Image: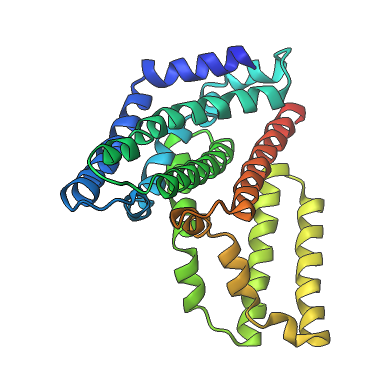
Length: 287
């Protein structure tokens, strides 16, 4: 795992991708920091970070799109399949390299509250709470991007799909608020969600039987619950879609609250998508 980690981290700087990623991230955040916190003398860094959460959506695909897609395109993934190192260690090594690169940028941001404190009484606790939340949010998006990269051989396709998925999660709460709340509408939306889940399952496993079972069981559940317990659909889709809003969990950190449930949520997202990535690679290994 250590060798994979070192190789991946080195590749980000030899190919300039890492430098471009850090430059874009730090330039945008630094501009906001200078204008909001320094010029306007606002003592809370959380305000700045809350204003630029969209940066995560824009830049994460830059470093995640090539992680496994390039391996698939060059067929060097075959070397991974036959390596003495387990697939879990390979994927975790690649993910840790991504986290390290992102952590370098966050380490620079950690100096901003100290700079503000030199010129006044900065909200240190709230600022570092928001930095922690910002880091966990980015870590979750990295895991999502890593999984998407494992699904294709094209960096461009991986980058585009990652951007679409991330912007979708970014706007999830707004999208949920626009959906109709009637029971029939909720049933239709839930049925569509099960279709999407079945498609994702097929992309991961390429198993028609399992995919069909997921689809049939899901649609049967939707129909049965509609006739047996219609109240089950009261606000159901809004709650489901809101759960997928990665950015929403950051709000408690921006208020200076060390939200344990939000931490568990982000760590769960990381674990789930790393697990999906490992299962995807293992599926290719034995196919």
